[in-house]
Length: 276
Image (tube, rainbow, N blue to C red; front, side, top):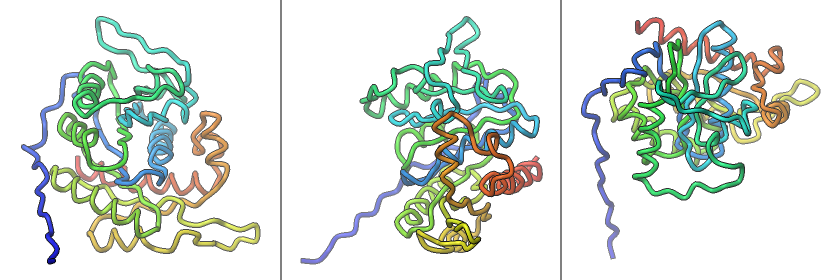
């Protein structure tokens, strides 16, 4: 019996969307996407946002991972209330006055979000259209894994200036981030580049050990002709600080991971400034 290969064409972008009035007040809007779970996407999102805030920018973070909203935990905002006013929903305030919106601010810790696609799309629409972000220099949108409802809704509702793609060195992660990259292009957005997380571990003697393989993210970037933004090493301090609600770029600026994020943000900023 011969095999049958299905051919599926994903939805095309109907041009870049017009931003809602509140989003027009945000100068630069970037999304962080992984294609696969477990690669450290939220870690990358909050540290990019925190590094931008360190540089004096006004920054917001929109967490659209509705079934795993971890941004509040990563920024020490568990049990911090948000409010609705006549001017819209007021986001929570994180470190360095970062503005934060997440479903994790609205549900009790541990409560599952058991929603089908239409409800997810509606929630994201509410976040996009009804949150009073004010005037921001940057909005970082933390996307959930995959190429389904939530990423599609964000890309159809928010005119993005670019997308950062996060992978780890393993082949299975690279396969999924390639799919995510192709979605970004299909939706007519700019891939800002690939970040390879958990690239290596530095032993006490200084030796780099490539636990999950070597060079996968850089190779993928070369194959797809997109920038390689950098490698982020493994350091237990990243988890330790995140559990305490502190991005490592703020808690330990001289750490090797913090320096890696600084270089990554340098490369993101350079592209966005050139595009103006």
